[in-house]
Amino acid sequence: MEFDGAPVGIGLTLGPIGLESQSRASRFDFGIPRLLHGIDTVIIIVALFALGEVIYLAAKMRQGKPAVIPVSLCVKLDLSQCRRERQAQR
Image 1 (cartoon, rainbow, N blue to C red):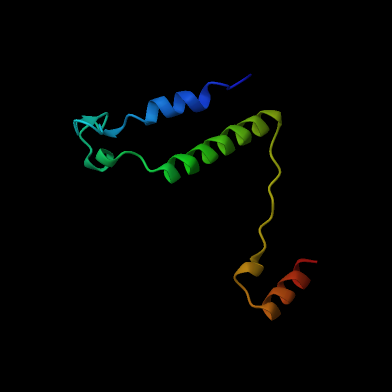
Image 2: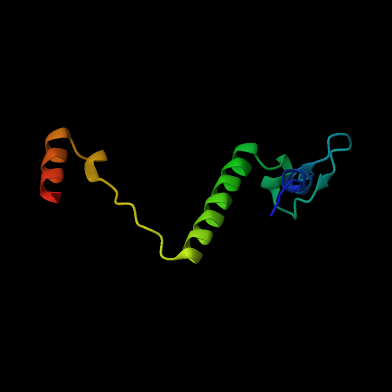
């Protein structure tokens, strides 16, 4: 499946939101004042990465149960506590 037109479609869908530059008329704000300035680019980029992750995980779940990656507690512990925790795990 190819998504050659996906970036163009996303841009054409989200680009017009906010105030029109010449007449300052609001477009696609649906009465929400926060949308008058448009949608921040960073929010769109983070949302697209999250959407990609959701699609990836959905594809993995179709193949079977995905493996759970254990998270280490060493991030919140100091060095001596981290060593004790690792020894306890072995």
